[in-house]
Length: 236
Length: 242
Image (tube, rainbow over all chains, first blue to last red; front, side, top):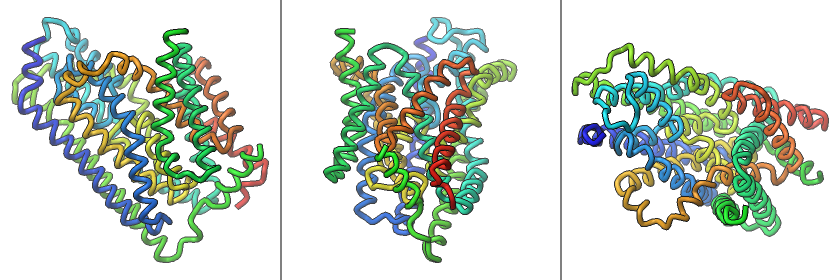
């Protein structure tokens, strides 16, 4: 495994990784520009723009560290630059580690084994990189037609679109939360507490008209849920 | 109940900022045109860039594993992930919007980062779901999240092993509960004004979770059922009549 990691961590792969990082950062900056150019027409004033940016930043810190901690497990298997490339664009620790192990076994090798030839690393990379382009290709080709469908509905009856977006969000997160909460009692507690914390904070913020609390609510709810879940491991 | 009704009123009476004037509609058209152009271009470049590392290791480092091996690996992976390539963009599109979809599917971590950050930004400026204001506010949320995420990733990759070694072990155990906490918090964020719909969504979620269905299509099914039930209930109340 030592030799293979030396190859996987070579300068060329670091260069590729930083090109990928640069593209992701470039896209984010371009869309910040697009959004700020149209903010006025979408009924957002400059102070609301700052509020939106601030709450996006605050809310992303927790999840980003969560993602970063999980990726450490991948570094040991495929090296730092390849991990950075795979996690930095579409793909999570779960999808990429399954892709890596499938790619390795297609070559007849096992991830993390002592005898891991460079061809097996190549098989792993093909599976991960081509596998990840699936989402990218579908999004690139079909977002435009999804947009046209949405505009048709919007023109026909704008109220339906409002109902659909609210329901889609509720449905997706009710499922994701249920799936996590059945893992263990501690997970269930973490989930329920963060739902409750969120509802209480948002109600209170609405009631007292405290806008900063709405920006921090997700971060707080996350911290409260994680802490409670962890603390209950001592009693449950 | 009264809360639910109030929320519905707010959502349905203010789905869009007035009737957009000529300037307004043309500028939002510009927003969509720019989003499609830059979204497609950046995705296209990253797709090309995704081919470079495997081509490099195969043909420059001369370690080609053979197309048969690559095919086997891809087919094995696509057999359970392939359906997500199509279902995920469709499932998340109504909430992410055009620009949000381009951003979220490039940076990844859609459910655990992009959607929560998009909705946090929307709630912070008081935008109602489905409105143009929500779409633009969500773009700010996701774009900033994408930047934060990539910066934290780079820091962690460069100093990761060191940072992990100085963190007290309980921090890592706490992060074991990050997923139920994120998902629960976002559910609360959307359900707090319509608790009834939140409970309905949870019941549907649990039912679908335990139903004997092919597991990868469970989220889309849950989303579709929730949309159907919510639209039906809104219709009963007469809230959807143009």
